[in-house]
Length: 465
Image (cartoon, rainbow, N blue to C red; front, top):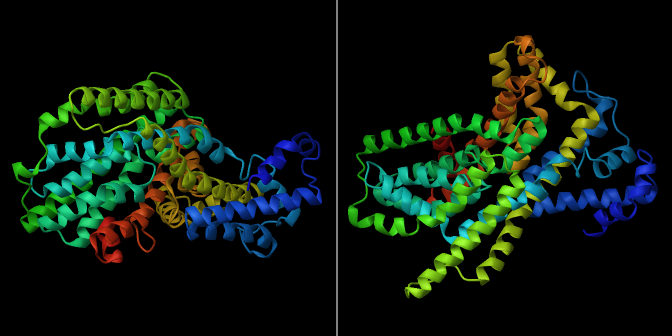
């Protein structure tokens, strides 16, 4: 595992001089590196993304025998291996670069927020705000999952984290297991659309589209709030239909206790302020990590003096590093594997081919193009983590919308943000919705597991919400 990238560092100048003409040793190293990436993705992420990457590799070789628009001249073995492993358009491309810089720091930041107790604080705050209203626990699930989604990089992890608390509460109140699991899955999935982090895809989008990060999260705010309003309304109407009450005052956390822990939100507020005021994402994340550790240690010191339980100890600094390292493995493996898909797309021109095919199939009509792109994004997003999901859908599905928007609005210019940003947001949104859309709805299946309900029925309920 270590030797394959070390070979690139050691033989860097020779690789540059013979670019496009790999030696037999280059090919061996490249093949081993690609196989290791696929195996790492299989272990950490799962079979679906590996299957998609394998399908794209097969497509690269079978191009001459594919009829119609999607056919191409094909790639020979040496050229494809060199392109995937020894260029910046394959495995070592933008997604892996962004994952190992911006995204790693934000995942580490999220790990420290968990260690300081912010996750439980969000649940308690949501209980205090919505627990007494009709169908309270379900609304708590919506609120807490939305808040956790702001810093969490995974809808499934979000379901497992907050769902272990909210789903049993919903069932106790009277919701069916399939609906309880669906509420948590839908709310957790929406966290990937919620600024400032958006499951780390916001940073990738800024790199891909060359649109400022602040503009991207500004565009995401209203759709994310509308999404949560829709889920909240669905939960409220279901509670009215079933006549479900809220929690009693004794079951809710006390506001006095919440005020005493309000310091936990300081790092999150700081990172939003730093990003909006022009700090780079890396600098903002680094400052927020230091701030989260400092505030937690100061609070622990105060608790020690007041003879209260100490919640954050110095050893938790090391445990936070471990949690961040483990948390980033899935993202790195997924984006490296997605790099294989991007490499095939750039080698074969599949993105534009598929885009023009969808536009032709829709007969140039914007609405039909959007419907076909939606279906494509949902299929491509099945079983794929957030960051890799965006990489795949933006490379393959978004070009179709860009093509049709350029035809409909030629006066805007070919690279106008008003064309590029909506296309990327649209493909990203429906790629994310694959987490609650059967037949492969990972977030819904995780919710069903906790609720002990039927996975497919949970997925259908989540899709309705």
